[in-house]
Image 1 (cartoon, rainbow, N blue to C red):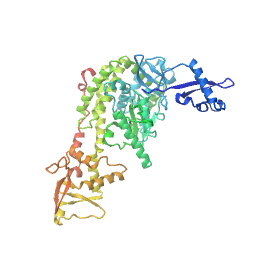
Image 2: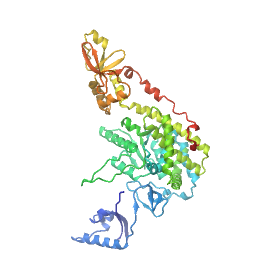
Image 3: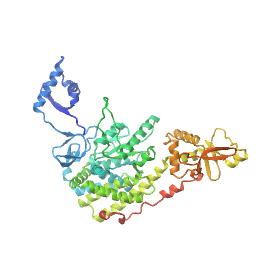
Image 4: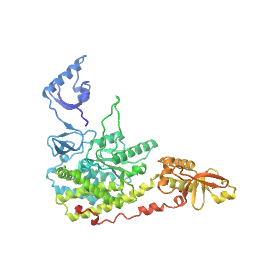
Length: 570
């Protein structure tokens, strides 16, 4: 637990005017340089070697007799205070009176008290829930469903973490400029404050350390990082890619870099404690494992049309309706806080079992991500039923739609991840290099008729040979050519040659045989008078489509009926 101390000081000018209250870190108090920073020329410390010491002593002595000692929290989310669960937000807490919460770093928009919106206290729970559910009508379902599921999952983070099933994905909204992805994220985030597309809490222009710090402060909250658009210099592209990679690890693993103080002691850990929503104009080049830590949603302009309905939803958000919906939801959760860890654990396992069956052939993380989003969505529907907005039959119908939508979207993501598998990058790169005539192979029949001497091609690199069934590729030469192609395209080939051997073998692509063992992934082949160890790769893996993968991804994941739901969910 990180603790710090600060002093809040009042001051008056000589003419009796009260100066603005200032806040001073305890570590900065003794130097007295904060006087000028706080009040400018309206306050001054008298000259003299001991004047600063006298001023400091007098302020501290008076403070000892008059100051009130107050505990102020600098994070959001669930916390037990006086043995009772309460939920912190900037300016206060749900479930506790007199609790002070102050968020630095531009996070003071995270609040659940209406932020002064007129009539906030008069908004009924049902009307607020209806405004939240209405997002489904102004944003396309394949966007609205994961957005709502993620938003309502955020306050469950603490209780899911207690049984080691904390959310482990980042929701990535990908769309070109003008697709209103930031608008969609801001509307969803307005459940936790008054946000617009211009006032989102973080962007890719922030440093990685700033983003990580905010992800720690925003416990049990959704955290939006806006605007991944890798344009400009190679250095800028590299920086954005590093942040995207860091975000995928942060959201997917809850990872935190260990840090050390100058004196060699370890700093307290500050791991992320939020759910993360990211927007971008492009899909980041973070490799297969990085992409698998995102749940990617593609947004087209027609998915979030500019309409009277969108304007009305934004106005209701500005008037506090979405905050009121989240306030009621958290109060409902608070009443069952002690039972939530086990309840959520069971719901999550039920949905993961179902998703594992529906997402066969996808990345191993896909079922867990789907289960997390569905758990948040399900709890949202339970609350809507609790306040009288929806009947049980409508909730069941909504769950069936969500399950079908999420598995269909996950299927599309599997296609993207498949393209980023190192094996497929390698095979596709070899095919492109051959088609563009940057490399060449000899036909064995041609080499044989020429006495075993391969043909030459000016300006092209010989990488092997082929017959009717296989390409026989010299491993180090073809690996170097693929690496160079990736560099030309502004990326890097993500794995070493040894790891490529492993992945080719795992994918069932390397020819097995007596000489093609775990120790030696290549197999000798005599061509003419010489015998060389080659990678034996079936020709259809380079010349044709990867049919096995396409068939696997062609499975229909969208057939969902109420019978797919566990009995207690219907």
